[in-house]
Amino acid sequence: MLLAVDIGNTNISLGVFRGKHLLRRYALPTKSETYLSQLRKVFTKNKIDDAVICSVVPFATIKIAKDLRKLSGKRPQIIGRDINIPIKNLYRNPRQVGQDRLVNAFAGISFFGAPLIVVDFGTAVTLDVVSRNKEYLGGLILPGLEISLDCLAERAALLPQIKLSRPRELIGRDTKNSMLSGVIYGFACLADCLIERIKPKIGKNAQVAGTGGNIHLMEQYCQNIDKIDSDLTIKGLNLLYNNLKPII
Image 1 (cartoon, rainbow, N blue to C red):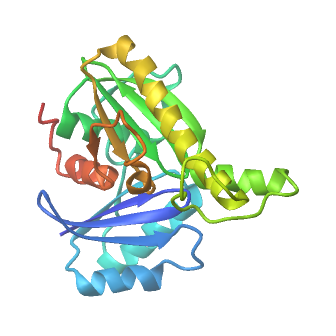
Image 2: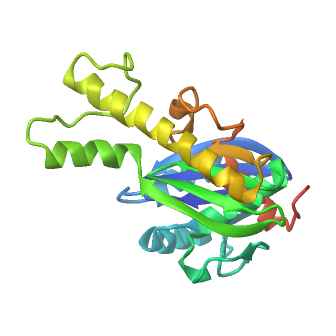
């Protein structure tokens, strides 16, 4: 079985695959003091043969790779080092693109076709754009929902520190719900509007896929997202490890 590891700024998502099938999911906090004991539990419950890593956090990559090698006896495959993503990257400086964004683009093409927009509600909110010729064109990066709430509390003296959750109503009737409504509805409208602006540039029939840790919170508020898959990145890692080409 394969362990797919997506190391994000907030959480590390783990997926156990047998062939094309995702069997189990796990999550670890990226800022954990130690990963080894938590990873050992995953290995105890699953017969892991190999691992593949996609990461945007260099220090965590080093630690996770070392721990995985200790547990499996094999050096894990790392996206961008051992495995290249077979998508034409049209960024002005291709090395600036996070590997997770390219993995999402590749996975999105595989499952949903092209042209495509991938909206990722993670630590940051990103929109990644793929042409009808399956080229990665670039995208947009915005502060994430939790970051926005944290900044409001930090920079505005009378606003409290609150946890991200669903607002009670559109028009907030207390400070907490006014902040939640502003962030949730605000980012939903922002995503919908950006999708509407991007589509004419790549094709009005473009599919829109939503992913990321907060996608299930946001999906009921966004009107222009066609497909939801919170496991898109780890599924993309499985495809890349097994050298599976886009289906469409």
